[in-house]
Image (cartoon, rainbow, N blue to C red; front, side, top):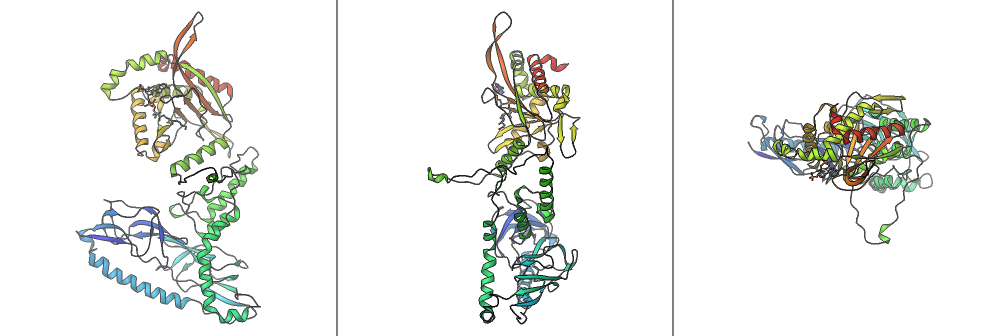
Length: 553
Ligand code: CAO
């Protein structure tokens, strides 16, 4: 077995592209043509295929790196039977690439439409499909213009999609769209006629003679114009309208082509908020339309939720005028948490109910379990008791075990009791979920919560381990504080905040007794739960924790 380099192949004219996804890691076995990584230019995202079958030994790039044709992105050991030796990898493919590159250059020269004679400042052109990065017979998935549209050079005309990439075919001219000669679903190859255009001569009538004698200068101009385009587009992006309407930050990458970006700008839709339904989560026009539709619908439903619209944004001052500052990109997790918190805060009418639970006896019992815990290798903290008490309270007061479906005007009543636990990790807040808490014993809950908390800190949680919660417990008891107002983890309707237990004098009818009191803060969604139920819930909790024998009933 010999080690060979995995190189970036011909990128069909794109200079530098960004690595947006790495599909394999060292040790993975791959077949020839299996995707190794995905790169994205401003026009298309493309999967780079494995040059042969074998085992990946190293990946030398990371997401966000810029690569160009010929760059080494990793190493692999070709499997013995793949026939993918160094020779077979380098020579025929290298030659094929060179050849196809030369051919493409030739072809693109050929396919450059020869301008027809000017007549009164405009001329008719038939736009043809340019070289398609070696692809053939690719179906049209979207037609981005309509007859009569006035467009600029480089505006996307149609979007085609192969099994490897989605590409937009840009207009070579500024002008007016005439007859469209293709339909969605048509399979296109280089040279295929796309549409007719009336092309405006550069400079208009007054400068017609100048323009006619300066064709090369015109080409230079349109080239630099297309280079400038992404910058111009970014500058013309609309100002954020609401507090939740953050402009995409570095690190929060949106996958969408120029036409989709343009549409989103026109409609004032924030792409960072739209879930893509295209390949690899790419946002397509339908996603933008669906998003805008849903926003309009929400705004029209009187009781609907203001998801940022109409709320004045927070304008940041230039902090450097007050002193030295440093800026850094938010981590993906921080950005996601910030969005979730704001969404919950804006969507949920919050109320917080406070209560103290007397856990003097519970603590005596818990401490008495220390030796047993050491034997089992499990530490019994107050958390398993809280989990058990909450599960019992949720069963007794099922109005807390629901989600609201405002769109369908329905209450979703859950017939299971899964509880999330907020875990403070060096990377931010994570909420693993303990399933079927009502069916588990205290030791099992102690072991499972410790295991999930450790996984959260080690970034080892699987998505399934963070889904499905009916309710959340956020315990700051190990840290400190007397009370706080947690934010409901919507679509759940309640969350229990737990602060640090403290000895307090409690009047027993005759005298003050020193009792260990645990502060509880129950935040709830006042649409789903009323205040009386919230007071019932915390009362039930405090009774259960005050006499843990009742947890057995
Ligand atoms: N009052 C007093 N002491 C408490 C307590 C309370 N309410 N809760 C826990 N403790 C004690 C424990 O008994 C333990 O003490 P000992 O070591 O002497 O026994 C110590 O505090 C540390 O406990 P722990 O935090 O390791 O364990 P836990 O099971 O109580 O909590 C977990 C686990 C994952 C909830 C916790 O580690 C954590 O991450 N908490 C932060 C959650 C958070 O960030 N919430 C905010 C979300 S909103 O921003």
